Length: 146
Image (cartoon, rainbow, N blue to C red; front, side, top):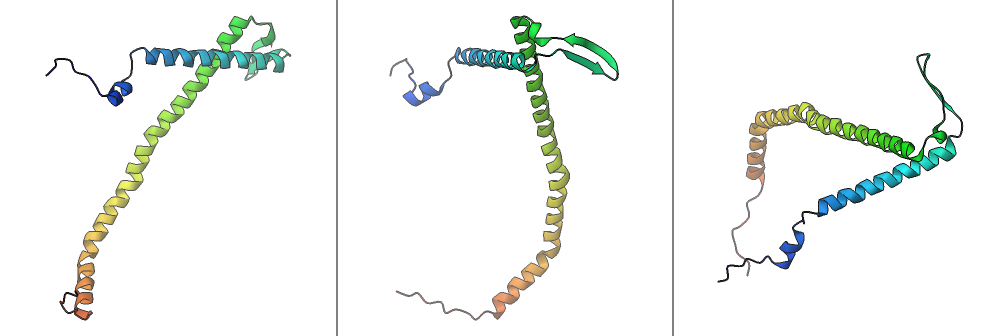
């Protein structure tokens, strides 16, 4: 026997290479920046008027002109906004992932226990009905047809 161990072609193709994740992350980051740049261009065309930010009567920003920002700052702001949106979606998914098992335990477990108790209570009646049905049915001759 050889000391060299070779994988079949199907197993060798399915094992991930170490650089594949970094390459996928790079493409994801590139796509993220392209989307952010597209959002910046869209906002630049959409918001040509200055923006005033007021919360509870307190003016936080007055006369904020988004089109006057440098492109790099606008791209960074768009990336941060997209990141905040992604984190909001991730938090929603995490909360939903926590609520589904809790709901299954809160609703499904009592229903399952109730079904088992009902089955245990009704099993003598089911057995009695089956025995009566077997007794009332005409018997079949035990012949083998050839």
